[in-house]
Length: 239
Image (cartoon, rainbow, N blue to C red; front, side, top):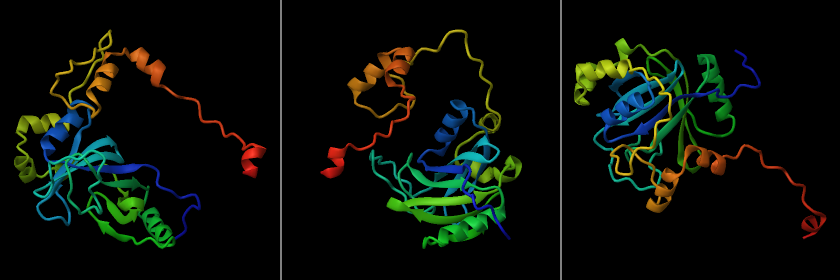
């Protein structure tokens, strides 16, 4: 079958992140970002590991992978993944999956990637998506997938739900996030001693940023003008 010469991945099917506490991760993305839980099940092909999916859109998800080999010793700026089946450090990216519309497009992407002398494993049928796997520069672990509309009734495994320590009420909340109404006035920054997740920055810099108003941050840190390509001068060309 033929495919468009302009074929390329058109989105992220799922961003998979390793975690040592999948319940906390699911609840954070559910509570803070309002993403509904769509799947929680044993990870295919990786014994002892399970996978949770939260929906960004019908064809775009944030996913989490948990299991006995995931380390909690976080080293900032260090990468930990070499394949979709490799454990690492909680909070780091395990692999990126890009989305295509159809299985035929998936096969076309497989052939296009192989035509550049890059090894591709697959396709593999995971039930709610079909995927191919390959590596990118600096040991990036990459995937292209087709498929969407995960059936939560089919893909949330009660055994894994219990293993995560998620109660019936908590599961209901994860599947149907509470609505949020924005107040008339902006919500102020939480205090510095909040126990919620925070960015990893030097304390003095972090305090300075948190002390600035949203308008100051907007005015000082926004950059909307593209860089201008400057033609080299004659002197630079002759150097």
